[in-house]
Length: 391
Ligand SMILES: [Zn+2]
Image: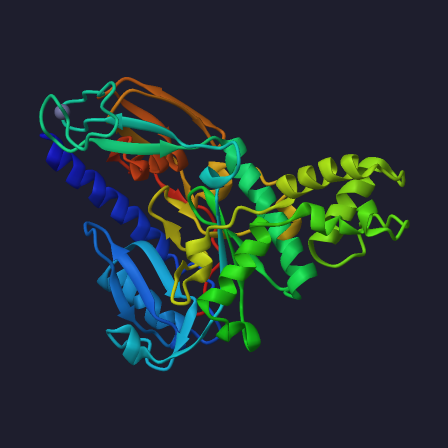
């Protein structure tokens, strides 16, 4: 079979699996006011989105995605609109937006994705031509696949945990929900009913700056200590102080156990506190008041994993496990599109280019979604017991 028809048949198998999942009527978590939201999806076999969809019930949405177009990616708007189905933004009549945050593992300090570059047609792995979009041997477009370590995804989970603390303590949003993105990050979602709904982009940017500690002046946070001020009464930051001073105070208390540091020691500790407590949220996501967010309990086509709610208490010990995050069970046969030697989410896969091997469904589907393998057969795939939506 030529490689293009192999690719088409692999895509058809993947689509069959995604349809199987949605046909099981999974409990997609939808906003209470879903009829005010724009829905959007990227169907299989298309590089563009279908946008400006509107649904008034779970059943209506489910009928669309199982009968009309199976989504590789499924979203609803963080915004509420009077006319969500209007084809241009102006006519939708914006009513307000939830507050959303995205933490991606490759933005966590110390984490960069490893990129695999190869030609899916001739198998050439270009050396020193990382920037070139075309294979120097056969002229086909090269594939670029990014992989990130489990540790970095776990570090992103810990950042999401800190974000929840910031939102609860400093912003009065104790009710944020956290979702694993279905790929390698976390989404934090605050449903905004009143004031926070109408914050504009600039106000949302200020929240981002606060969380990232952008431009924080640590010396002025510690300013009370400066002897030039002549008060003579050093007041170390206390965990009970508001804002960043309080976070720094808590960090210092943990490390000093009540001792009073010199101003220089305090400054060093304060810098340390800021760099370890700041949260790397993606600015462009939060400032966008018409952002599309992934539907919780839908599948993310970048990895074939669930967009899954994580209890805040579970973030610190979050384990990135494909078995936990995939709704698929059983075995699949895959063909490696390049040489792979991958350890991820509790699986290890090693294969030569072109090799056909049988692997667990979660990792086989993951590799197919990532573009490192094509699916050859999926006969034995079953679904785990999934929570059902309303009937
Ligand atoms: Zn090539």
